[in-house]
Image (cartoon, rainbow, N blue to C red; front, side, top):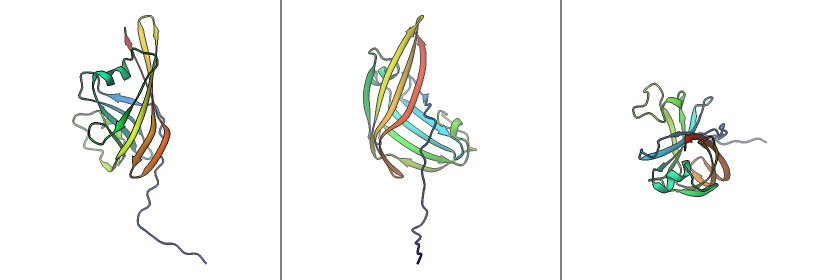
Amino acid sequence: MLSSCNDGDILTVNLEFDKELSLCGDENSNNYVIYDTKTDPNESLTFLFPVSSANNLIFKPVDNPHTGDLDINNSSIKFNYRIYDGDPSGLICQEIPSSTVNITKDYTAEDGTIEYISTYEDVDGVRTVTITFNITILDLDVINTTNGVLGTYTHSFSL
């Protein structure tokens, strides 16, 4: 005997991104936004946190390594998983985003912690910083997870 029930839509979430993160904002902005996007399906992970002297050290560390964590509080520090009806890559850093792509689902984490580890290498007056962001705890409507890699962001600047 086979039976089934239908409780409505079942959402299957596959948070398999390339883990090569991008950045919006700098020390002259109000916020940093670390993000990863993908197509097929069109999705993004975004992590927003305020610019501050302490958070600036994530991107321009003095200590090697420089470590810490940021607690998601859904006000000044936010984490979102979004689904779109088109390629989201042109939306995230835009002050006036394109009207051709829409957010169809937006899931905001209620709680969580993102750990970062910043390391650098200085060569010929240029510092290359690599920052790994790890999810230690994430409470999102569609997924609860611990100990996952969000991804890595690398940038360089002159000393």
